[in-house]
Length: 315
Ligand code: NDP
Ligand code: OXD
Image (cartoon, rainbow, N blue to C red; front, side, top):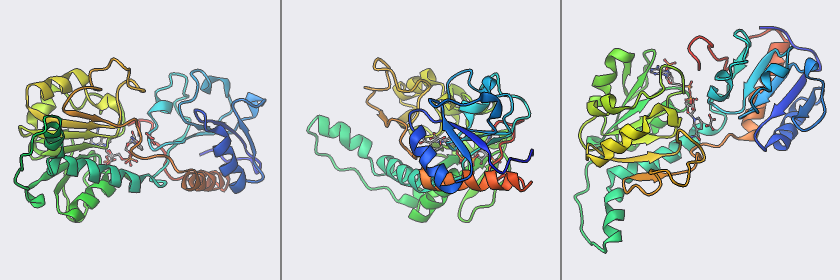
């Protein structure tokens, strides 16, 4: 890693939240020169950029960048930029207050299916008072794709509540109470025992469209999907088909290929789909600014930063 100036120059471009990020960072790095995209600055002097959905073309105006910080757990908005230099370090947020929120979101969504609330809302529309047997939670099998900072917290919380939980990742993990699988060759087996499938993978060339007609066919009939990762992991037309044929019972979606979800999109009024507007876990300024400031100090001291993205694999 390159080393930093004692007074680093930092540019913030954070999709309308520049001022809040600047305030949080100034408190932690009082000696740094911190500017937002609408202030005047000399692009040649910028050492570090903090980005969330930065304007297209901004990266190539900054020739002397030493690192880019993503203001989210996902880095797809940065690494997908064609002008990103191959060796420029990209650093992501790890948990930073998001794991607790992801746990809350997934407890709600998993119970929605496990306790038949999807069926009861259809019944309510028809003034239909019919009771269903309450399934035993230990018989409900949840599969979590992605066992990173967020997926592992979600898997552990669902397991603690009594669900029977498995997880799938690229490299093998050992997590108390969770049956783990790793690699493409185990995907069909992992999916085959997921009554509720949760996607918490990062968006990379390998994970795009990982949920499609073929992989849906590996799920047990009547399985449900929860996706709060990125819309690009699901082939949307295949999801609609799997719901309409009855192979899938329902989908709980926080993300979509196009966001905001267009008004005319068929997801909005599909009876088996619940939509939330990318709110599963908000980036918390305090925790995130602590991580970023700590990393800038670490780089300044010649140490490796935490949360460094592997540019070869894309997360
Ligand atoms: P991490 O990088 O910590 O974890 C990613 C996990 O996915 C790891 O377990 C990794 O495996 C696994 N993985 C990656 N590629 C593959 C693959 N090809 N096959 C199998 N497993 C794979 O990410 P986070 O947990 O921090 O975040 C996950 C995603 O959640 C983010 O990238 C972002 O897109 C999304 N997100 C959504 C939010 C929302 O509000 N909707 C908020 C925050 C994040 P391994 O452990 O072997 O590396
Ligand atoms: C993230 C997100 O990646 O909010 O942090 O989606």
